[in-house]
Length: 193
Image 1 (cartoon, rainbow, N blue to C red):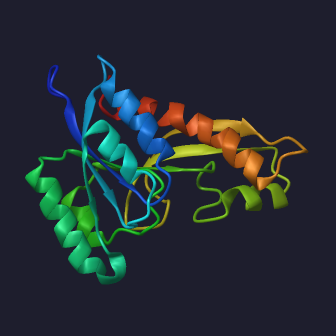
Image 2 (cartoon, helix red, strand yellow):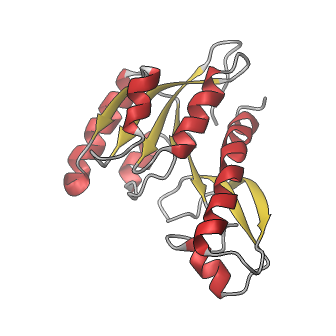
């Protein structure tokens, strides 16, 4: 379990693949006076990830690793994280599956946010699948990462009602705004704050 030490902020790395909207909300959370985390590193598997621009804007160091050579990429990531004394890793739209070996290095210190009410709709196309199955609710889940896809211990969930007029896009938008609130709450929860 991650321990918060007095007023010292926990050093955190955020892993992204895309636009970085959850990254942005985590950065804003980290800048609050009473926030328990400071984001020291942004990692992406995608050179074109828009989220990398946030690193430049907020002066947070960022690295891009090519996952075509996953073992090499993960070794470099571990080196970077140990070098920066990272104690908490937040996956925020990171579209690669981390190896057991990587997870073992940071056991109980890797969180992910997923756009469904897990254990339902693991993996991709969650909104489309929820609508097709005529679900009344979907939502988002923050969970610990283990070696199985979207299967780690659940920390917090937020329900979102699916309306008859919802499309995958409109539902994604509704859920994303809840993700931005849920992730900081989940971080405070695991740090017992």
